[in-house]
Length: 474
Image (cartoon, rainbow, N blue to C red; front, side):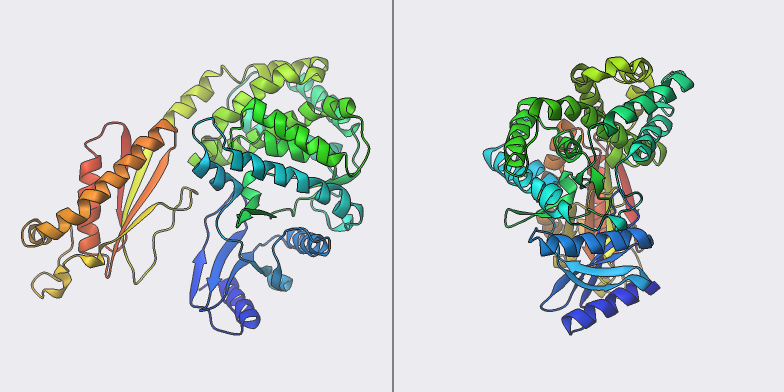
């Protein structure tokens, strides 16, 4: 066990008063922070390890400040910043994004989703204006404000990991000049209120339909337009234009209760900030997806490109930055991009066998897992001394399941295949790229291996998916 694991368990014990009974690592997001769900018989908490000390300090400071303003952020149960760890309230697993994915039908967003968005944007000014009025900006990291330097970092991130990776031609000096001019223009919008920085659907948790807010450690002073644009132009949520416009109007109404502002002036900067946020996101998708080959990020690129197309038409100041406009205009029809997306468009089904004495396999794709089927209800050849030394890959075990255990196996596998194929068909229509299926038994060598092999054999009859098979215990 790693040192910070032990320290997190100690922190949990000090808070709960009891020994932990489970310690589960949660799926990675786009950051290097590590999250763990720790439980005992009565309590559950989220343990966090982050090697970046300044980022930890910013998060803890902001979290305590927002709590004092009675905003819905996780409670801090304990902290040991010397060891770069802290313990947070467990807000569950329902993010705004997962709620949308579960409740939408194609492009149609239900009234409950709309109501949730309205609740969220009504709260946003409480962070920006109320809590932002007396927050300690000296802890902001990496800079105290979303100033010209911060904007240029985002623009260069976009250039280096998106434009150059896709071999989109541009004149380096002319684009650099436009970057500087565009950054000057954005800074002229003002930088007087708290900017959440990463105000998006993965950072909003729903607890009994009530929004809670996380991952604000990148907060700093900035323009009001940035956060609402981040939420409404997020690629993963694929919000329709009329929905975006309705929620924006609702936000502006909520904002007007906190301060006076000129709506036309606000809107003159809204689309430019939506564009710089989209460019920053494309830089991240390029680095995490195109460079590191992580499918979860590549999936977001097509809709981010649609956002760029939309913003090219609505960001009127772009005419003052001709080289930037030309480079952006070349993205939608880029052949390199189309080739990369088509390469990663294949649905991959990862099938695992495992032992319940170990752990359910970790989903490397970043999607958080998939089906888990418990094979311990099936006849166990491991109890037969003449079969124990074999595995589900061996003829003797296969003969056992195909003969004396055939009725139980057939009753078990028939609905399994149906469930998995239903998901595959749905995933293909949604252009999803990964599905995980796990079979577990006591030792992970007989029943789970046989069932995993059977499903893999069945699915490999299809020509529209890739099937990968992994046996963890053999």
